[in-house]
Amino acid sequence: MRIGILNSGGDCPGLNAVIYGVVGAASKLGWEVVGFRDGFEGLLPPGDFSILEPDKIAGILPRGGTILGTTNKGSFAAKVGVGDVMQVAPEIIDRAKATLKLLEIRALIVVGGDGSLTTGMQLMEAGIPIVGVPKTIDNDLAATAMTFGFDSAVSTVVDALDRLHTTTDSHKRVMVVEVMGRHAGWIALYGGMAGGANIILLPEIPFNFEAIRKTIEAREAKGLHSTMVVVAEGAKMPDGGLVTLENCAGSEHRLGGIGERIAAVIAESTGKETRHCTLGHLQRGGSPTSLDRMLGTRFGVKAVRLIQEGKFGHMVSYQSYHVGSVLIREAVEKPRLVEPNSEVVETARAVGISFGDK
Image 1 (cartoon, rainbow, N blue to C red):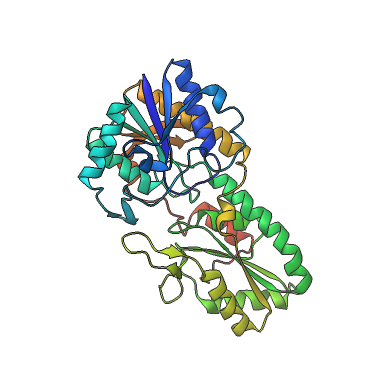
Image 2 (cartoon, rainbow, N blue to C red):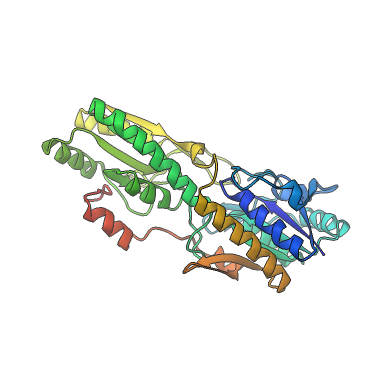
């Protein structure tokens, strides 16, 4: 029995833990694991791959990124936005099938977010046995309560805020910190709450600058002369627009720059010295937390068991502390967004955090 695995989409801490879990569980069954490099692109003839054996992957658990490499571009890109799917060309899928047939791959594990799993679903429809493993630091897949990489990203945000608080307090400034989160604000919400932010701006909760100004001035009146603002890159400006770095034809636009825009408006409206900081890919890098190492390993082992049980077209899912599975089609139907009236948001409001809406 020979199975394949690939990582697709953005990288994140914990990918190597999934590989570790897959190889470990497969070797116990006497199976061979083929790792395809650079996502789905590694499937194209003649194939870019390596045989993954337990002794060759020793020590990869604490490593960030992925030993297989990954990409969110190329011939297999299928997701161009929420609800927008682009079909992978049939000839590309046929070439991938030829590689898998030549290598005698009986099943393929696809580790990725909604875009990568959408591609995997198209391969499944073309007759390639697929099992999905959810990967996104945004934690925005509705079919699983948590994805690996999220906890590591939040930890990076918290560490950054801890450091920025000291310099912000020293100069009595406003600091605007931009974090990742295209459609969902989970990183901003969890990172901001745990890192002691005073204002958190999310894609799911419309904000206005008047509310932000009043929050800062109310803090000033109480003798609190520094303010920490955390904003998700996908938060919409009051006019409803997104701030983008680049408009990419045929794919999702590159977001970025909202932190700088907000900082400029705050400085003008309050007269406060205001700085901005974009954490960017710092949130994707570095060693995974212990939680992400555990979750990634459990996901990898479960993926092998799904193949053993013949549950193709399923994705590993984490719910109520248990690792189970759901249909990939159900997993990519809708994103998991922050509910504006959820318990977590209400908890934040209870301790005085503003979301720029009141």
